Length: 224
Ligand SMILES: Cc1cc2nc3c(=O)[nH]c(=O)nc-3n(C[C@H](O)[C@H](O)[C@H](O)COP(=O)(O)O)c2cc1C
Image (tube, rainbow, N blue to C red; front, top):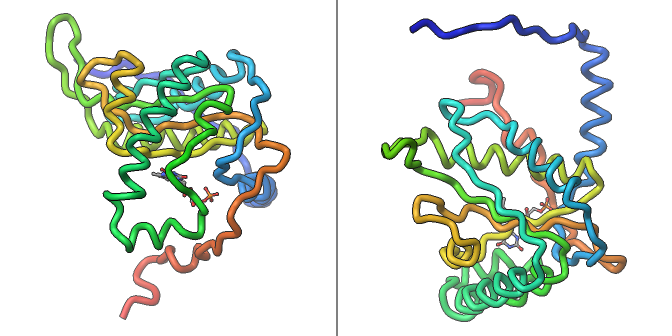
């Protein structure tokens, strides 16, 4: 059956308009930082859902949207997540991480303690869904890793544009998130992302940001 199509267009914008708009957006995005020191100031659920609606609008392989967001604002569940994450992180920092990894983490001043998992008003647990049971049939999803990464990118951007901060936290192994959130086996924990306002005394590491030129190649220019 041929695909059903519909017209689509964008309002024409010339390069001057694009430069001005992109410069404005870049200035805003340059202020985005990962934070690890959250305020407990509440964020209304409808704001969280607006952010998640933007994340859910990300492109995905064959439009399968192979992700699930679990938004956690229940203090008991947040505590369970903190306790389980700290158990894994303690093991990571004290035994699993090789010296090289610990050295790479030094500039961030992180350790196994994750109090923000209880302090932040909401934790978004993002799962990737590799396959689904639809009408009793096992249906494979396409590019779930790439698609879920894109949804996470949209999520982080939407948080920032709403004046909220987040953290992409990966307290691996993360199976405990599936158990605490009561999700089935086909949903694989992907990222744990607290969302909220920065605490009044929030500090972030001073990081050297690699310039774009170090990661950009036009055609074969500069290739020997
Ligand atoms: C896939 C991924 C996993 C990350 N995992 C952690 C983590 O487990 N704990 C943490 O404190 N930060 C984590 N981060 C945050 C990075 O350290 C942070 O993005 C990086 O230092 C750059 O800082 P910025 O986001 O403020 O620019 C992670 C980031 C990404 C993209």
